[in-house]
Length: 448
Image (cartoon, rainbow, N blue to C red; front, side, top):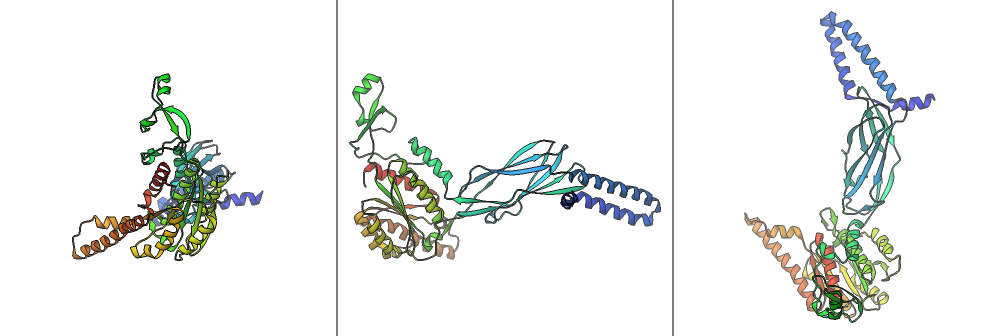
């Protein structure tokens, strides 16, 4: 019993108000040497302050009367997205209290001044939400929740250490994944910027007769069904299914270039996960290959029930080893593991035309057996420099160099097209949308 009481008292702290009263009393006693008539008044005030502090401390230290708990919106963190964490605080005292809550956030966020200040009446339970945006995948360790409680008197403060810390895993962006997934199921991907691709022809595999909506090919109108229903009806033909779609993610050192807090590799990982899910919804077989100086992991294209989970778990641990990318090893793996003609979406980056030419012979061999789409990144900082005003000789020199690099980037697209290799030249923030556009275009035109 004594140990419990002592542990409770140990958590009592002085408040700023207590220190202020103490300073006032000290100054008052010093002044009483000059004005002796003040001394009895200061003694009485000192005793009253002491009794008030003891009473305040006793009230706070009686029992554990504050509780706080975290309620994450999801069981995992979504990389690169805003994640909402709800903090629920409950006052179990029989009187109102003022509470300051400090949450021990993972060190990756580098947030050192996080706190929530509130006041709660007796029995009140209140929720507060805050947002976190992780910028790297991996484990995030949350610490304890610290609550500092004072009464309205405010002479003492009790420190509560609530709940042990726990870990939350940060996965590739599953928030955007669900957004794209729902729109893909409802055929509303155009809401996120997906382009409507005009079909040159259509598959001969009939699926159903449905009502005409804007964008349907008028050549597929079923006039007999239209006459029966008294509204336009069209024949709906489904695209070819069960095609293999491989996302190939380059994890070499060139993919560590940062943009808006995330590396190019993180953008590629997020886009690969979304594309894999959309391909699965479109009845295709998604697969994955990661490589740098060697081929690291391969997830064979399939439509098994756990395929999406396998893709997610593989991409969760994807990290660069700062080595030069080995396209020869990639070509060898493709020849042995991917024997059927497939769509290969290669997420990589080429800063110069010479960098492409060193790997071009391997890309051409891949393109001889598969449909290859090379996805590389636009240097947005370079674009900002190109469109800024040159107000000095040095600025003109910088812009000239920037124009040279921009010209080489565009030459890369022409060089790839010359050998029948498709390409996507995109900014990192538009990577997912542009990649899905290209995939849907290829599906619509039956290029695989």
